[in-house]
Length: 223
Image (tube, rainbow, N blue to C red; front, top):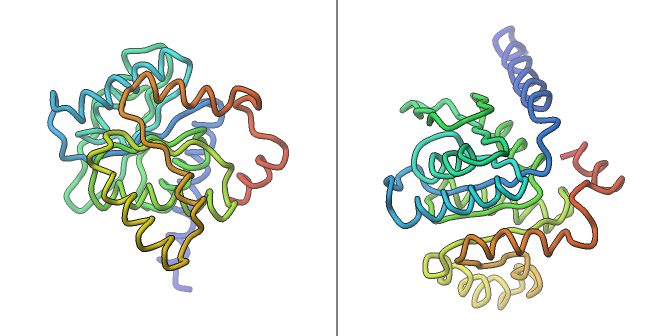
């Protein structure tokens, strides 16, 4: 390993340490994903802003990618409420501009360290319409939960017309050809109303509480 590669490893470690320290006390938190290309005032933007404000009012910190579009809407909604709005910003070749609605703002050079933070501190995932990056986060969450590498949690898709074709494809191809179990599709919920999203999260944790069990804490340590 040459010196540059060694320093890169130390840089990755530093990202993990800083993010873990700064986010250690923000639970319960919800990670919200969606397109950076969504315009302010659009339907998806309003959905993200409303659901995030309701989550903040209900006591959830809200974690987004820190950029424009759905990320901005999510941070904006949480920022207007009493709970922290958290942005996990990423350095990109075409630089992502951080939005102004962040109580806690972290910047990452590496996608994989950033993705660990989305998963490590989440008690639920909310996924609004988006492109490759959004799908990457969605499939990461599904894979981690399906394989038991993170705690089970609600994974909620918002705006059914956008997602229905994908869910139908899961059933017609992945389940039909034995690539996943039929019950794996049930890891997803589709809820269009922001208040319904908040109620679904509370319902999931109603009998068990938001704090990870000792077994779940051990899983999260090895995420």
